[in-house]
Length: 577
Image (cartoon, rainbow, N blue to C red; front, side, top):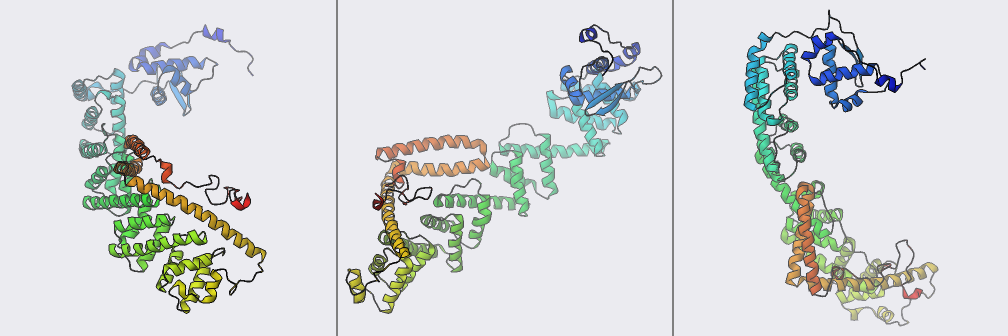
């Protein structure tokens, strides 16, 4: 700790000495900010307050990078020594008459240059301060750029920046060209001719993307990268026209997708984007039928849509397959297994797929009828295949239904039914009346054929579980039938059907907009909200609501499944009351 210090009051009443040599030799050639920074730094040398470069920058209202440049200038004059640039730490040196003279610049060397620069500034309606002219001349002294080349840089910046022109921007641009080893008039002219060409191209992309501002210099990097990759200008324009809205970053993502696919020409890009639109629409249509929400279709296109279309399936057929898969509770992955099965069996044409689905619909309808008799049956392709096998045995629906009745209480109804029907097939049964007598009496509760009266606890539990499942399956079936009847009634109403179609289209448009054109999403969202409101009014006129179009289960706690969310049995089952 120091022996003694000045108090703040004492320091406030002290003086900061400035040498006359600084005033006579350096002050006239420095700008106001440079003098202000030098004097305040000199004051801080005798002040015990803790200041850093950024605090001084904020206090003096001088940008930090500008403050660094200022003390770099004073270091060239040998008035200070910059010990650290970031954080900025300065050591002040004494003003010495023998050293520290600013670098002499011969005015006659730049007389013609100054006249041309002045003409440019007058034409642009701008004016540079003396210190700004000084910095430009210092640049020409320290860098190898030709004077005419620098005038070309200043002219370019004046045209590009207009009222926002600054000497710093001109210097930065000139320094960047020097770093790229472009010093001569010919080199700079060639560089700016490329820039002008890029500017026209970038302006066109901006218009296609709905961007209404001057091309940003940072966006030129996109054009350079695309051109280096071999992409034609027309291909980028096709992508921008496809997007219609967005930023250059959004456009770059789509162009990168083209480059990944090895697409470089404008024609190939247009064809790819046309197919991409069709595939995206297919994904949204399939998702709608499956009841699946899709935001970005690209992953689904790459994983499913491209494969399905390459195998020869028509878009309409795929949408119909999706509608069928919805009834089985399948998602995209489940639907893919159905499509793969069709492909392996050579069913590709519209007619072939339609015939396949018609047969599956009949099997599904029969399976639903069996559910109302023997309890829960999972809607799977294997279950439908089993029904198809029974029909191939020429088993009438009545005989299959009889087998279902006899499978009541079985833990696995379908395998039990399959066993009965297999036995009846061997016996040549074609009608319920032809079922062997011992089976018929068993169906009537007779004593000719009986299962052993003794049942294990596991069998009793299985029987009780089967009865319980059958009870809830019937309730769910009724709820679904009511919902289907309500929906059919609503769809027969023209007003509801119109608004319902509008809502569905709006949902697809909104999903696309959220991915490709976020700026349009809000407007679509508002239109969709209005359409939903009109749809609700149309339903209300029919004394219906959206809830009526969905199954209304008797028990709200378990949704007619018999089990609560935590896995416990619900108390709504009559046997438990």
